[in-house]
Length: 160
Image (cartoon, rainbow, N blue to C red; front, side, top):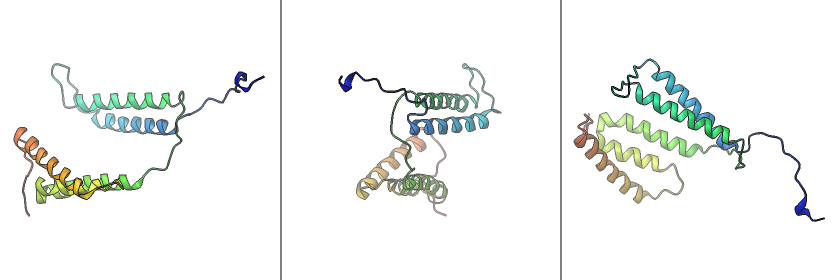
């Protein structure tokens, strides 16, 4: 008999894609947190939306997606769970914190490029010249959008 006709023994059921299962649970936890935070806000109706409609809707959609991702991890095979990359987390979150600390003191002209260039070092493949060009173009776009198109009171240039 050939090996092609043999039947593999049944494997125990369990999590087959640990990365998807972990990501799904993480999304469900984030959704539960945001749902808890938005719970007291009036949701209103679809004709007259309240301040709680958007965060509640997004939390429900994100939670459903996370649940679906976690459930699907039982049915397909995939890569094992790997160690998280701390470098990316440090630089991306650090860029957000840097923006928050500098936008009122120095304005969007300084805070935008500074935080984007800092966050671009989240990858080892960063090219500083491209990061600077991207930061300047995106900052100009953000100034045009938020300050002029939407009229938001964001300081463009502010020095202590």
